[in-house]
Length: 189
Image (tube, rainbow, N blue to C red; front, side, top):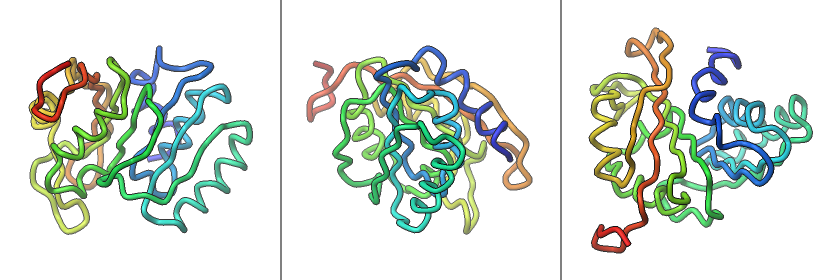
């Protein structure tokens, strides 16, 4: 995949949530392929938080963002997205090929839901498969994502785009919207 593919996977999910003051995060951003796509789609008036556990990958990402999108406001944090995030209230989150490294997804997704404003967007980019391999241990098909997203407090899940992949068939992007905040018992407030 190239930059145009990354932008294409995110475009419809980001549309309408851009402009001055928009706040997005890329969780498990790695070297930043999708952070670059966000910077391209959101423009310089938005802020992006890029989180990854690999400090070297974030340093490489920082250099590439500075080269290609020097006006982009990107905040880099060395963090594990499965732990508390310490982020401002967000308009959107991208999780591109990162959630498949997590076995117990629902608690992580509930924590991420807590970072989003009501109606905030979660764009998942994932392999469309329910059986993994050593490199992609816990993928989830779009059908599986629909159920999991609902259990984790997200609604209106829809398929955005797909691209073929030589690994596990194809990659999809999906948009899910954050439902009302819930208390510790999962009851909306």
